[in-house]
Image (cartoon, rainbow over all chains, first blue to last red):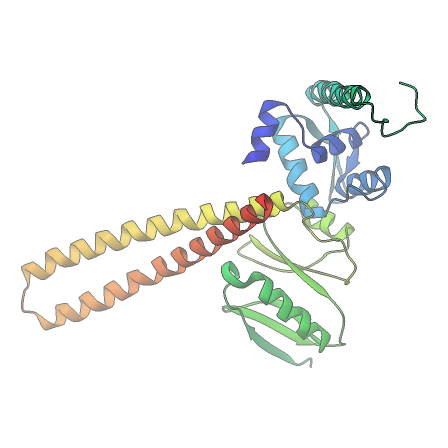
Length: 118
Length: 183
């Protein structure tokens, strides 16, 4: 139930976030799994049961839609609503990172990436 | 003709993992799951193979569901009541659920389903007992009636037991996963 609430409140979990960004281009379930695993170097590694459950939820929330059906595979793509939500989420996460960096600087602790000038 | 044998289930609501482990051991000996049997599984003899088994609950899934699992390396073996599905895969294959929350949601749905059935069975049982009680007070000394009374009560108990026990089984599983998540 917790996940459903997070979809309603607008905050996306890390997995929702990655599924939505993978669906900027149309993909079927297994391609979503592969894209996310490649992008995160296997750090976010989703099983097919998890991907299926989550695409159903995102579909239900109207964040993604069926693009076409080919050889028994359903291909999904992000919707306008999905893009809006994702945009807000990127902003929210950017702010979180910004706050984190500020806090580290004030404490005089080097940033996680000391070579980077921000 | 290939040899076949039967393996009993200890009840999926309680011993899903134990059953899957047993199926994996059997596969190692060449006995491969073929389909569900009465309160258990039918196994078929073949080449010994190292396999992992997983079970998933999903009500009448579309072909996309089976295709996705297949793409990820999980071969669909058999289904029961279009809801309980068993898959097998080579040992190194990524598990079906990498997020514990999703597995918990699956059990949560099973729990609710069995909870509804158990409630219906309970109401039915209570109505029956009440009717029998009224009838027995109308025919106080009839011996044939007391036999019918006993038999009917026993019969009505069966659906109640077979819905209430799984309900508590899934309830326990959900609790277990919740605790694991909090820990």
